[in-house]
Length: 198
Image 1 (cartoon, rainbow, N blue to C red):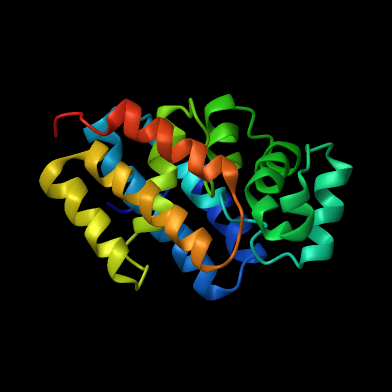
Image 2: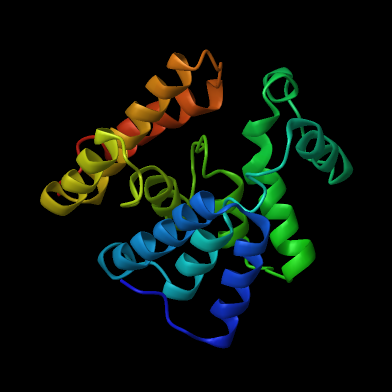
């Protein structure tokens, strides 16, 4: 579903494109469009969906030193894992910069952007949608993204979400990234949504 050409969204797209190389900008556009297509099916506000999708990766091109410096400057709580792998902070820093630089004050959008990489138990619906869209948007070239979209289409959002959470935990393990919060999120998702009907 294409993003509406409103002045607000044009401003956000330009901001995002200025911050990211073309490939990452295409991913963010893809995530926003995919999340927008899910919005009526799962009950999301469309403006919030597009905003979160466009802005979730605006700090993705930062080098480790810069992202860590910004996180400290913004008072974001840090774990030993994040000190070792500062890229895990691109969501929290993007949430802060969306608020500080663009005046995006909506708490749902902030939470969705903040937690889109690892998830967290109790994550709100917009955050769940962005978590899945970040993984499964159509520009993603890995077969797991295709499978997540297929599950959403054929079996419903909860099935696609559970699959995505499982795959992301596997991806973290494959990259030797200890992310306990991602595992906690997976356990919560499976408890909350694992047996949900399509």
